[in-house]
Length: 143
Image (cartoon, rainbow, N blue to C red; front, side):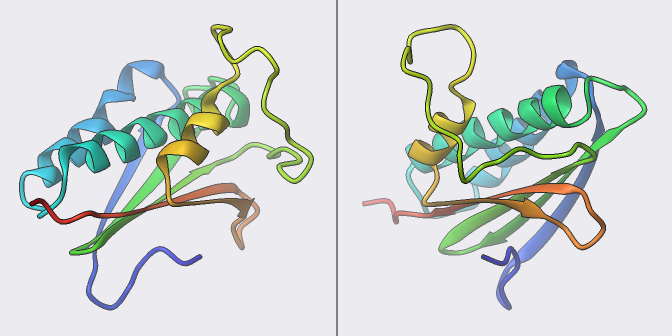
């Protein structure tokens, strides 16, 4: 899955690994939502997914080290939003990952949320060795 398409616009964001910055990618998506012909639910779902991906990148990838950054790329097209989140961590064995049995517990539901709220979700490594999460949401036209 690639992020950008020929008719998409890219926004690039780099934030320190501090939870107080999680509202920034959310604010970007909410601002863009006003200009996209889609249901608010689509934006809410991809926004939730991005917050989960960024939280994991900060906590598990970068170890909450404020000197390590999370990079986020928003590729916005009329019919979809593709988002890439990169961190400096070692990643995890996403092929062997299984959801926790107790979904009501306070922690450990991020990947499950991302899977449910995204149309496409992939985990891999970028060419520079950073761990990469890619999310895509196909936008439903309002009406």
